[in-house]
Amino acid sequence: MRLLAWNILHGGGARRTPGIVLSILEHQADVIVLSEFRTMMGGQMAGVLADHGWRHQHATPAEEGRNGMIILSRVAMEPGPCPVPEPRRGLCVEVEGGLIVTAVHIPDARAGDHEAVGRKAASWVGLLEHAAERREKRHLIIGDFNTGRHRLDEAESTFTGTALLGRLATMGYVDAYRAGEPQGRAWSWQSHTGGRFRLDHAFVSRALAESVRRVEYSHRERRERLSDHAALVVELEIGGKNEGNRG
Image 1: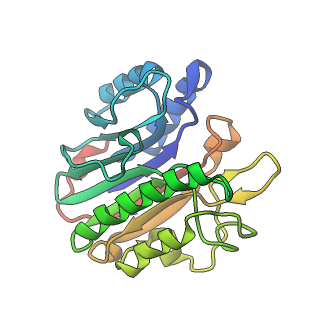
Image 2: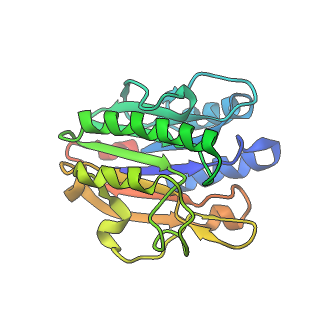
Image 3: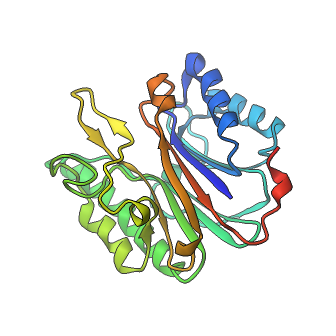
């Protein structure tokens, strides 16, 4: 099963949306997670993708002009509880075959901005409770976490929330990219000053860890200015998958 997670930057907009859709089609993922999805342009995008086979769709509550999230799947899925306090920043579904996919967009927060740090911490607390309840199941947590490990997912130590991110590991969750590249220097977002950061992650429960086959960051979309984020692609070996779904 192939999954694609991508922050499409404020809904895509009229100019970027056609290229975003074409890029998604080229990846041919079974399950798609989009962050910063917006209702206006996103409705057209979701309609085109439904016509191409991603008929099962679950989105956060529509808020005009606000970023949200959507999960699109070729196979049936059952919505679950929102994993974070802000409903537009998290989704959970159980995909046909028993895979639980939790999609998140954790708020960004700079050190010293106490209100933003508080929002970010609240999101992490909600996610950690959600993750703890599902750690014995085949559970994938994927999306834009707006944090990473100091001096490994960034050059310096500017991230906030790194200790909370580390608590996933204490529950038995594995950073799918780090499992294959313990000291790898991949990145998914670049600041206007040139700093490179790995903000987009996929964490798998212990029960799913042996199923990870490939994790990569696709920078073509970023180079073509379709978004400021690279797309994250994860491939899992899931028993019982219908190989005829991809077409």
